[in-house]
Length: 88
Length: 151
Image (cartoon, rainbow over all chains, first blue to last red; front, side, top):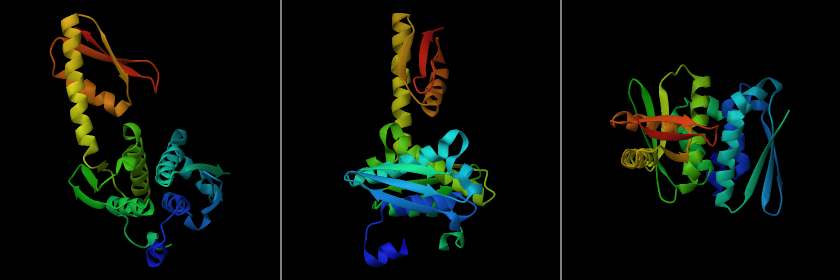
């Protein structure tokens, strides 16, 4: 986020997902997000340390769903759709 | 990561998230023995509220989960945007009163629109104070709805 302020560049959904995932897991260094930009959609693939998969999914998938909701809201602001895939 | 070194509070996490969403906001917070409350203020924050408050609820759930895992905190964490929750609660109470009146005057059960559990609770609580009606929920989520019947 510091880098964003320094460059004046707007943060993207990738940075948001990285932040959320790192804050939720025990091994933040194991968080990796790759984004594939389509014409109107961004596909975000989230990888975490194997021990942390449950942390980013949550009971009944609630945390994964909450992250998707926030990411989608953020993408909507730019008129885009965003899809979050958790790779395990 | 730097974030791990500074003490995370519900307010600081909300500030980080709204900044990453590129929203211009002001964030305030208060706490007491039972609750830590964070208010987000600004223009055009509908996107942070979402349909039926879904985005706001997602934000609250994530912030609560982050706080609970990183420190001993048992107090309720509530996040509101432009007093949305407060205004919604007021609207639901008025809706409950109007529908109770309808059930009483027609002497027939009234089925309300489906709504999430937290909103049904507000309605049930409001109806407790009204004499002559009882309320129950029927159906399966997310179509679960309240039925108000003359007692």
